[in-house]
Length: 350
Image 1 (spheres, rainbow, N blue to C red):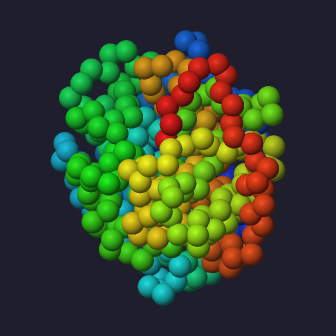
Image 2: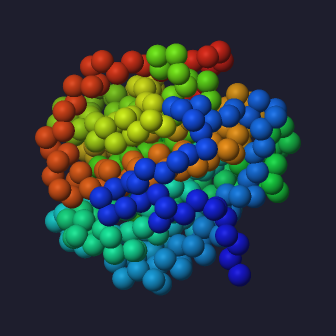
């Protein structure tokens, strides 16, 4: 019998019109507890690769609109899954990509809950107007800690460690030009090249110490910044970011800043925009599920609002594309949105 992994219920989070107002255990924007050597981090409450696979197969059997596809394998031989909702090939299509970095899992938890929601019938009209692709765990080897290097200095408890890198220590989000590794090859050859994708949100986590206006951020956003991105692709990316910002930042538990990310084409949001003219958005959620640096890991009491932030992001994006409101959303907030500051240590990017 499949273990119930998370107590967070999507039916308590979402309504037909979007995300419901739900009391959170955290009191303010981005203020869930750090790890700090004290707060617990239990990886046992997160989906394992096997439980995620069981979940996806169950939803595939239940949902007539969903098709589950294996797009490739990891270095250790795990299947990489794509959940597809392709009602009309002429519809605009959005891709949600999670866990290029295996220790950034709360976005995966949110993506799985969103998949469940898509099968409830509450978005039937929406699904007629937009195609949705979800890769809920690109780096399954890193997510399971099944790697060829030691993770003994990582901080989480719960039976397994999660690491940023793939099985041979490579950062998949720096492999979008060379495409050296099977995970990246699967993404490019069997998704980015295969489907006509208009939008992509690349979901990540950053460290815990970033702030805006003196308050910890719940996350940070950035559009593609490579010089070879076409102006129209960049403009659509900024619109996608505006949709997400407007959905998350005013909530009371959301507090977003601009991310200070790299310009290289080898980074996912830049590579997809340059090579395929996909309008992309990077969303860096606060805190990681495991790390060897304590300041990067987030305590598990923050899981709820970070998962909710993911669901809010996916729901708002899909609805804005479906009803066309993304075409007229005001992007001027980008001109005044501050870059996040870091207190006090340097964090890894993307």
